[in-house]
Image (tube, rainbow, N blue to C red):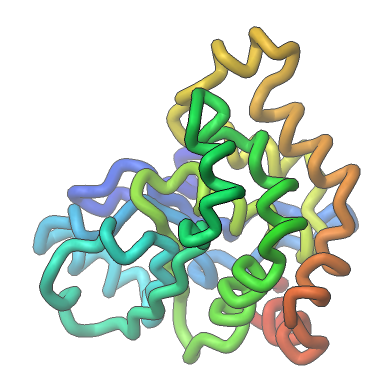
Length: 220
């Protein structure tokens, strides 16, 4: 964890996906894609560290009302792609009505209902300008965790290793999940075993060229 965790003053849940290995032994390139919590919290020194790390594109997964006013400091292109789709109240009335919210319990239902939303984010990362990409939500755990899960699965990282990366973020609902006979780790693994990630994202609009760009960006 220490080698992948990034110390950007003001954020406390930022880490590079580089350094993880695929099931066939390749290593993901460091500095290519970073997951994190909201960079609005960064101090001036934190923004300097972000820029020094080579981040050229920031993909913001938050809803409109979660974003602060005013522009981000200059130096990186910002792409706003809300992952939730909160206008679909029939879906969110169920998933925000109890402690099942902000857990991987909703990942599979969300992917099946809104494949295009995840595909748009993956495509934005694939098509980003040269340099590093940061994607983030508010706390850097659940929406960011879903996108990290998909990216790593596309690159061929083993489900257990993807789940281990998710669990590096601060735990929120493990007691609730334990009461249901499961855990975040088990949910990530079972989701990846039950869902053909590439097929779902292709159904959402991801193209061959996007997958090629992702591999060029992430795989050494």
